[in-house]
Image (cartoon, rainbow, N blue to C red; front, side, top):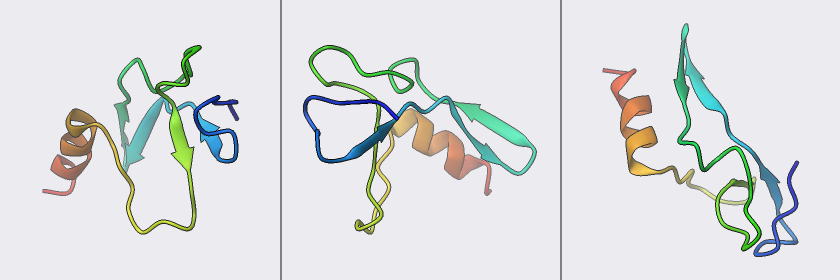
Length: 66
């Protein structure tokens, strides 16, 4: 897990990619790390209803289900 100064009370992870079936969709370069300002990475929150992804990653995941 990564420490994120913008979200010190959340669990943050670096995201390398998302697997759908046999295919792995690579995440944008910004998601596997946190910079000094606390930008990037992925917040893990099991209390929310939605998963929010950058549009290009979201569209690639959705297209795997078509």
